[in-house]
Length: 400
Image: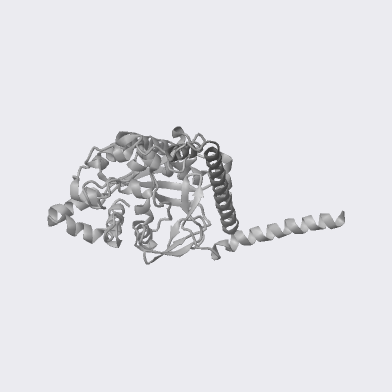
């Protein structure tokens, strides 16, 4: 009996040691991912140092993009910036992002909560998450992206527990999602479980094929007159019923990042680039199921909810907007994006940063839209380069 108890103790102790090592150094042995799974869909992984477009991306002990990955201990900040990839500053090192420039030119305590592919639903849930964790902000500055409307209309869904998912993946059981969120902190264990899961799926698929093949052989032996078409029809009877198959006509059910970004496969700077054309073109097809208006309304609702939560906690809300290359090429200074969020801010915002004005002043001054895109955006991309980030930082600094 003592031997059995000792063996159980050894196994239990070994599991604790292995789990601890996995938690601390597991990512040193596998390809380091940039993102982790969270309640609000995804976030940057903590304490990373990886190369992204030739630049080093550091995150601190909370997963916030930073200059060198230094740990954060004081949870009270003057300003929390949040937005998507533009605010994160993809392809630009922290000190050259608009958040980093603002940080370096002021004495304010600043954090960058921005992460690629965020939208108002995630802004709301992430801010709530960190407030619950004991973080305090004097002000939250949200930079609303052009792509946020499509994200809210077509890409993200939310369950009754306020967990956020992509439509492609769909909602899962809360316990299952929580298990993923926990296990992702143990990368080697997570990878092993994922591989075992894939192996089991392949095995089940192989067994199904064998069963289907056997059924067809039996039918063939019992009735030699059954033709090939009938055999194919019989084999298909084991497939999922039509009601469970992905309906290719219903666009939102088959979204992945490529199809949602460029539905018409025309390129980033084309008039029909679906990710950004909603401000100047009324085409709901890539915005199903909520459509453009539904995406706008959902974005506004989430931002109103965010304002209410911040207001209860005596936190100021500021909002900023900026153009994509599509807006510079085909839109106007008083864009639909500007109208929506300037109107939202009339009674809710401490500051409203309209960066459209700078770029349309440049258009008026130079008369060359392509020159402006080449000067302020990453080559062949929609994101700002270092010069574009400096523009935004300077516009913010005018009010501080």
